[in-house]
Length: 491
Image 1 (cartoon, rainbow, N blue to C red):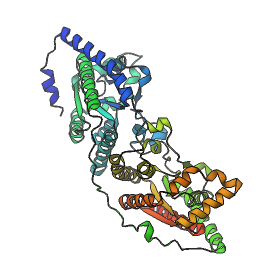
Image 2 (cartoon, one colour):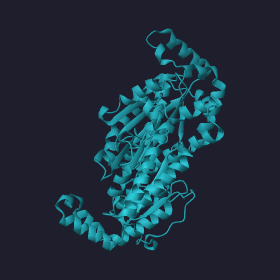
Image 3 (tube, one colour):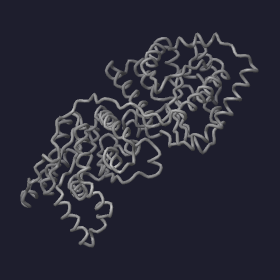
Image 4 (cartoon, rainbow, N blue to C red):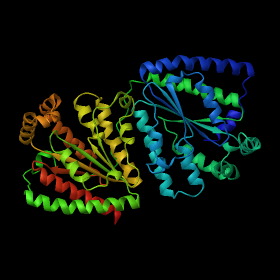
């Protein structure tokens, strides 16, 4: 793809024409920002390329034409200690724009992938996994209504050295030149080969690369501005086009339907207490080993209202060091969460390595509540099965233990628990009108859950159904499964 630069160099634009076209593009971008806000189109602009190619200065010129309330700029070159303990795409995902706003990345995910590959720090499989993750990330964003525009800024080895030398000569700009910048110039040819390969592999129809000749700064600015305007206008015209639903490519585990699950399993109080004490002791030991080995754990709970998720979670957390876990009760999304990709609020709650995150309700709301209550389109929820499988694959590839529980009760037991809650003053806060309303849709929810489990019970993150008519039995089963999964990872 970098061969395109040679063609661009042959193009000469007279100074007067360049000024006129630049002014036209600036005015158009100013007009378009209000349409973006009105149509709630989120725009993610990624500036990548060679060191000293002028990415930062071009961003500065572009944002002059945008209301400062409608954009954020993120410099993504150096990871924080917190980011080093999260999945690869974490720091990019948590900074995606709200609907109707711009986000500019000064250096994106490409830089780390290409640099580590060129420096021999990635094995072939690691590089391929990173490329695959990047393409999935970009496709998920565009499928969910984002405009993703990626610019690669190109300069020659000679021009790069000249600019780096100029920066290093000035005391106030020396800090801008890093060891990686100097390494890149010294190994320019090898780095370019890896760049070209990456650009080819990630140049997709939904998120194409725009190669920018950054030798002449004003010409580079014009190329970026005109491409931005063109991309935004096209996205606004195509906002209502449904996107394809990807086919599942992940290995699935055969699961029973909820109607086939035997809910008569029970434990006596004495059996329960004896087993619970031993299992909690073991889980407590494992928690310290998880911390020492820096293995993250994600526990996801879904189930019918009053199925016993809270009590189940409580017995697990009793065994854990409170400094090493967090429980996330997930309710309806807040406005700033609703204005982003639906997985955004879960990326924000992922644990650090060595820590445990417990989700009381999860990302599966998209294929359950949102689906049945009409909060998303049919295309949205049908795409979500694959998107969720990709999300959980990212987590397990990162090294996380992912344990998913569906807590199951029958309709009679739910009625009994609802009635008890309503008649017990200290438990009345647990029962709402929405709970009673959801009960009327029991059969619809059961069908949706069966489909969810069938399509997202992967080999790497299978569902575990907890028979919870008897809460004692469900709690012990959950504890055993969790311990087994952690031990499998550690040993």
